[in-house]
Image 1 (tube, rainbow, N blue to C red):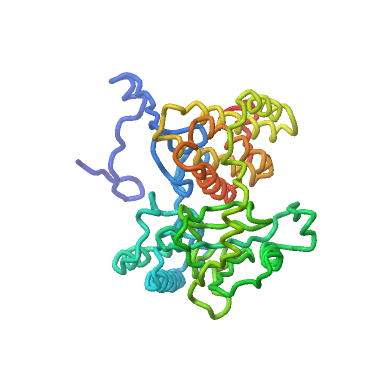
Image 2: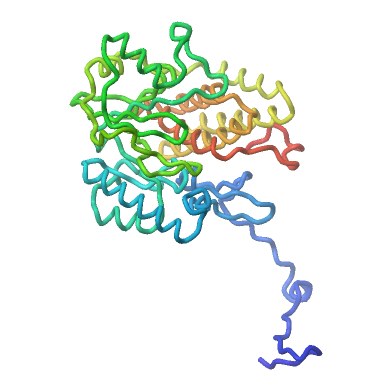
Length: 397
């Protein structure tokens, strides 16, 4: 191809035919929409975790990657700081594996698993650990089932969260756990304790031979438990610039006390795992929500209603129900984080739709586990109503 000089004495390539010329010669070129793109920018038709969704930025679409959170980490995203953080996390994951615990990577700066089927793929293999954490500063997940652990998660209350009347003097999950121990005539057990970035604590215990289930506040106010089917984030992981740290000098889990095992196994079943409410009641409640509150709240309620309708209709699509609940919980969590939906209300409605779809068939805690995972991920990414949504209040996400 010949090059020609311009007045500025620079060489450039001649421009090709314009779009109008191409249209006259070959007809108008149809705009090809990329398949699988949902209205909110989330890729459809494949299994993915909320940490790997795609988000719209105006006309362009770019992938939201966990690596974008490196600025929150030690060193502010600089190469030296990232390298040092990666070395710390690699050392911590190796120590966990050396003590008999199975680890898996969690999104950088987050709590969502990096691997699909994380419980099956959790590992103690030194080479796999070195390859994984040597590549990026992933947070560390401890798979409780393979590690034979029961972890008591002592949280701090959120705004508006008050203890029950009989425990009016407690202030957080730790004081609630102390009160339960004293009621059972025991002392707070001394075991490996991890301090979380939010100010809570993880108490690690060796699991008994009998099956121990996950619980969500059924044990006590601001207290959850993680066992088989659950995981916790490990020491060295960073959330919002604050790391998980070891509290005290105990580095090995103690045996689960008998009084605590009795309390866990005798606690009432979570309401989310019970009989599904009548569909008529759920539909009536969702319709009422779309007629209440501000314009933004009605828009958010419409999204919740659409998510529940789509989820409940997946009775025959066995392979996609769990992934669809995860995605619905993630989208709803974004609206909860923006203050447009009540979290308890949203969880109850999604649970009812999931139970109607038959998600409770395999395990009574499948709904609770999946809902919690997606909701937690969505809470970290608030979503507000934009100008385009004003014209379609109550539309699908």
